[in-house]
Length: 460
Image (cartoon, rainbow, N blue to C red; front, side):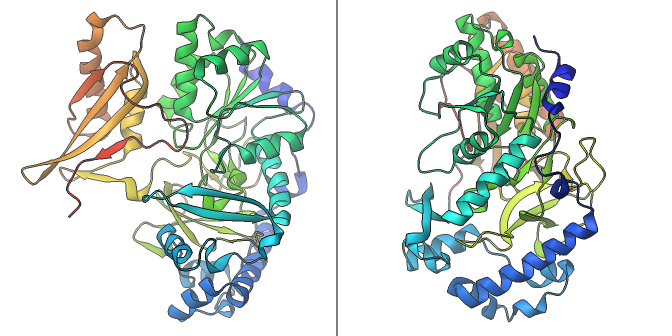
């Protein structure tokens, strides 16, 4: 079992920073750079991208209105995923905000919509090259070094998934083992041991599943060479109970959160990531993708540091399909205080702990799915998957939760597990939620951008 303090020192031994001048820049200097890039992007979008020109004209906004970052928040209207989808339906396949000739695209990726028709994302060669170096800076902050063997369990397909991580590990010079999400879990575990992987990249949920399954196979991940986990694709790696569970299952490795800003629209989404010297949280690389924390009900009103709000993000350098004040809707709290690692970027000390539009109002209580997950993960004997069901009975909304148990759990302990889960969830949410303990494998394993809320309420 690896000593965590030794790992921090080993991974910092060569150099702490990928780009020291950039990562340690004083805040006032960085804000000047950000403002210059914001102004550039606003003019570029207005002059070259019909989508933005129409949007800004409809709001009687002109790029020259922005003379400060405060102006940017207060005066520039946000864009939403719904707007982007509608624009691509009207102007297929990329909408009229692509910004570059199609023969300049290096990559085309996509994400599935509710109708199953993917939203298409084109990335130019210059943007793809810049993303490579930005992502390398991010993974270097996370502790990845040239002597690592990095197993990437994110998908490699239509979704951006693991592609940014692959770019970064190759740029750093580490050995990359891109298993993706199609390699069966048992094989992932066997190969992890066989190849002496030192870093595993995956969602918190899948990292929990890997560890639990490894015990069943007699190949405990605590006996592997893995000393660093990079957890992204969903919230969790900065939630105390989830962190504690992962640390226990994997033998106290370094654990870095890479969940913030991981939406496809904000590629390179590795512009927000944690470091090895803070206990959770993520740095916001504000001179790459500028992140604002705003009022959940009014995106043109900023909230003070330390106050919970919704995230809005902007590409400062991307020319192909740039997002300018894109409403991500993740909930977070920004912190400007110094980090032990020496980076001067602000942080989300709790990472993202839910989505504003995921909040459920049950019996007048605001319930976030991440609060239920934190409770579930805090109870021994639970398996990798659970589901939150929302039903309407007699005009009242009700929650119920199904939680898989560990395969090794004695069935005589299932009732006690149920009682413990209900108590933990009540403590976390302040309402009583009935829990059913179900067999392992009842629910489909979620490996990327997990969706565990099943809303059965009438749509009309």
